[in-house]
Length: 45
Image 1 (cartoon, one colour):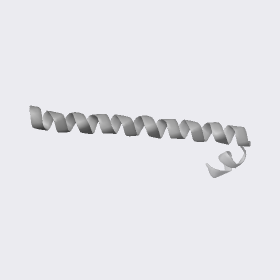
Image 2 (cartoon, helix red, strand yellow):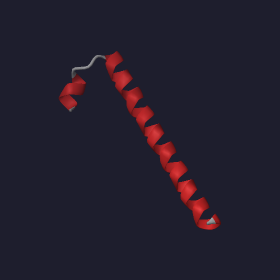
Image 3 (cartoon, rainbow, N blue to C red):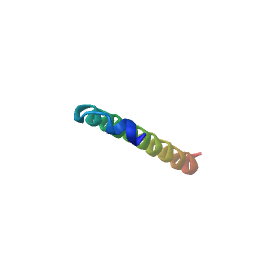
Image 4 (cartoon, one colour):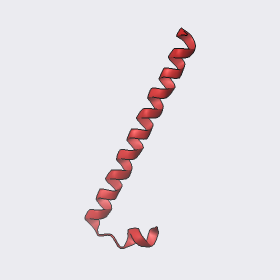
């Protein structure tokens, strides 16, 4: 994987980093929503 990333130019590396950051943000927000839903369900229902 490191060899493949090393072959990318600066613009492609920036795009890959953006995509990784976007995926991380989406995963984190989904995790927060599921956690909040579980807490609400625990206390309400």
